Length: 469
Image (cartoon, rainbow, N blue to C red; front, side):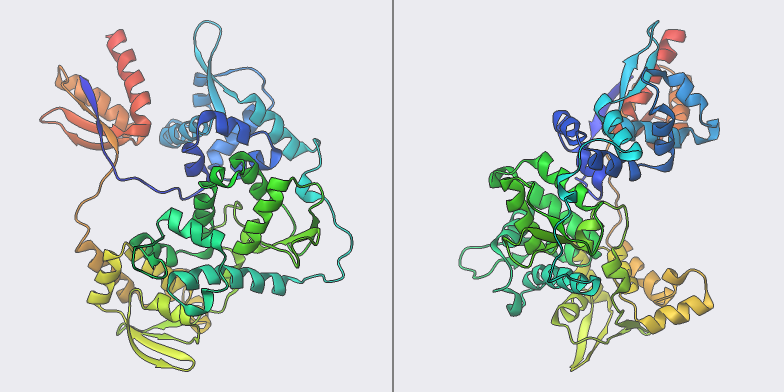
C-alpha cells in the first residue's frame, strides 16, 4: 500500500487558530507567555477541546491517550479526533510517552501556567490595564463607535476609489492594502487599483475585514522593526479591556507606542493627541479576538436594503460607499438623493463571481444590511429571522447562478493505493470513514483519499493492523 500527496487550493486564515497554525513552533511557544493570549486561544477552542483542557489543567503528568478516549462516547469519535488534532497543532497538547511506552498527552507547561493565571488570578499587572488620570475630554460610547467606523470606512472608501478618502487615509493603511494584494499599483496609473481579492474583502462583515487586515499588517511587522509576538500580545490584551474607559500609555515601550499609532489610524483605538498619555479602545479592537462573528458596530447600524421577489433592490442611503458596494453585484438603475434602485441579474452576479465574490457573501451582505422593517416583518412571521429578511427565491437563484460556474471542488489529502487484498482496503476505508477523514474512494481499484490532517492517525492504525495480523 502506497500513499502520495494531493494538492489543494490555499485557504486563507479565517480565525485565530488558522493563523497560529501558520506560525513556527517557537513563535507559538513565545505567544503563550502571556495570560491574555492563552485565554483568547482557550475561548475559541471547540467546546469538547475546552472540556479536555479543564480536565487536564491541574494534572501535571501525562494522561494516557486511552484514558482520553474513554471520556467520549464511541459515537463521537470524529469530534474527539478533530479536537485532539486542533490541540496538537496549536501546541497546547504535547505527546509524551508514558511508563511502559504507552502514548500520552500533557498540556504545555507555559500554556498551563498562564491559563491558570488568567482563570485564577495572579501574575503581573498588564501594561495596557494601567489606569489613567481623570480625562477632562472623556468620550462616550457613541463617539467611539462613530470614530471607529469613520476611520475604518476611510480604508473602504479608498478601495472603491472615493476621492474623499484619498487625503484622509494614512500611508500605513495603503501599505497594508498593497502588501495584502487587496489593491495593486501599476506603472502609469495614479492611485492603486482594487483587485479580485479586494472585491471579496469589501463584502465581508466588519469584524472579518478588520481581522484579515490586521493579519496582513502583522505580516509586515518585522519590516517595521516591530516584534510579532509583542504586537499579537498587545492586541489580545486590548480585547479584554472595557469599552468607554481610558488607559495610560506610560508603561508602554517605544515600539508599542508606534504600534498604537498605527492602530489609531485604523480606528482600533482613539487618542485625542499623539502624546496625550491615554487611549480608548474601540469595538473594533475589543471584538477582534472575542470569537464573535459580527461586531456590535455591524449589528446596531441601521439597515438600509430592501429586496423584492422580482429581484429589485431598494437601498435607502446617501452614502457613496454603500452604493458602490451594492454595485459590486447589482445593476444600478436610478440614483436619488436618499435612495438607490438596482436589480440583481444573472450578468451582474456572474460578474461578481468572476471578481472572486461568492454567492454566500452576496446573500450574507444583503441579510446583514437588511432594512429594519424587513427584520420586523421576518421576526413576526418566523423564528428564523436570518432566512426571511430577503426572499428565499432570490437566495436560491443567486446560489444557482454560482453553481453554473462551480462544477468542481478541491480538497487536500493523501492517496492510498496498492492494497494487497480487498479486506485490507475495506478495513482501512471503514476506519477513515468512522473518523470522518475519508475524502474519496474507489473500491473496484482499491484506491482512497483521506484528509491531510487525518493521514497520521490512519497511518498509525494501518501499522498496528499489519502488526496484529
